Image (cartoon, helix red, strand yellow):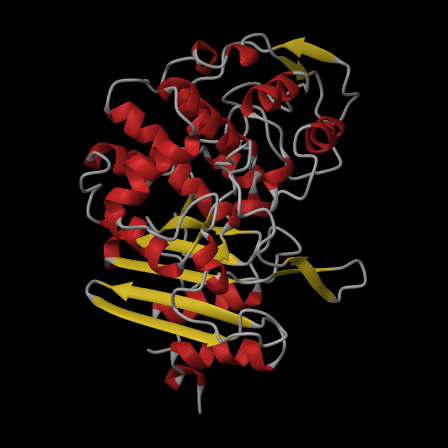
Length: 386
């Protein structure tokens, strides 16, 4: 069978058969035409077959959902894009920046202006992971704030302690200057909680998950759903796959820090409901203007070029990348979404009225997309079916 004749099931099944993943769920919706494939098993032991409602740790495809939460507050006039986040997060009121990103971590200057909500949404706060992870300030951020695997933020302390720890770490760049990965989404969750006076988990459930029918999405998994929860794997130092976390893990209790950067569990169908809301212009969740801002590239060309390790030439909206260049067959200008370090990806393509979601449970070893992701995107774009 030639590649252009393959079905989605066969594309994913090939990676099960070669041992890349124990299983996967793929969902591609072109308008009302929805194709779903569930292949393999929930673990390498073959304990149970993968199903279309299997639950995964979705890691960084949490980020678009966190951004949407901030935009709800924007729509309600409770925050504005030019507001300093220190209005609600006073821990971030007096920050320092390393004089030279490649220099000593204790050679600092004051931040030249406050971090704004817009900086936070566009990942230009000054906090986060740069292209060079060996930069002293980035290493300090990772060690003292993101002190565990970013795919497992369950060990973070409560938000106030986390923010206090963050404030003691100098920023890599001045606010607004440079796109930096990950940390801004965690600050977004803390901001939502401070503005609303409720936990991030409760806000997401009330304002996004319940209205959209995302019944299997959250920071915890109910006991009666644990049989649908997949085992997560990572590559060990020798390159061999090993268990990262088996159910139930920490998922039977709400973590003290509810990570907007990567803390949710979900299903392909639930993220599809979120993506369909974006394609519909926000529905009853967001204004059309907020969806437009969310799915528009806000970076300069220089910022995109400096972030090629993560963005591969594309731009960044709020909580996800935005395609601006047709570098690969699946790149369509305006395609919005992101990928997760646990082996997940989710995108919407407004010009094609398409949602594409891939769930696997084998972790990434670098910011570069996994081969199975690229194969899925190629299939979703129709390049292999032309």
